[in-house]
Image 1 (cartoon, rainbow, N blue to C red):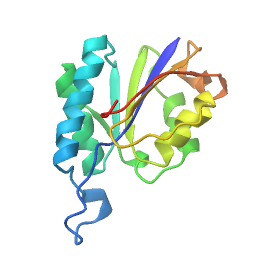
Image 2 (image 1 turned 30 degrees about the vertical axis):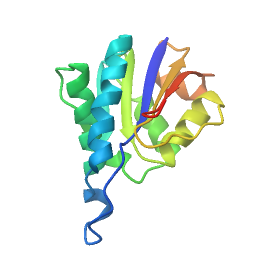
Image 3 (image 1 turned 180 degrees about the horizontal axis):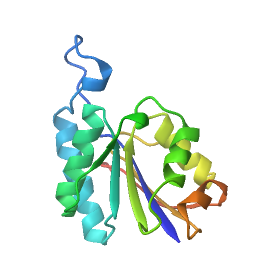
Length: 160
């Protein structure tokens, strides 16, 4: 059994119209929500073996806040291909994950994050900012995850 923690980045700041989308930071709420959600995971004992994030500033900052709150010593793995991507590509990333990792966190964007949860579980969900979808996939190898019927174990949101 493998577990994916699919995280939509925390709330971003739209205050500087001159910034490229990739460079938008978190706003005050996002800087508050990300460590809060990381602490919730830690309290449940749900700690990822690997955290992989989009290179967009708002996703990177979210991933780093989760890592700090979870006490994860390994650095966040940045993947530029997770920015402006597709569900098909996210499934390729998952298929290539190290088999020794049992729990992996992917920090990305919508609509891809929501679509990935739907694709893996069939659940009709919508991920608000900083939501964490915990998906169990009944496989022993990540390469088999895209063809497996996953289960949405929990959808946790900052307001929930």
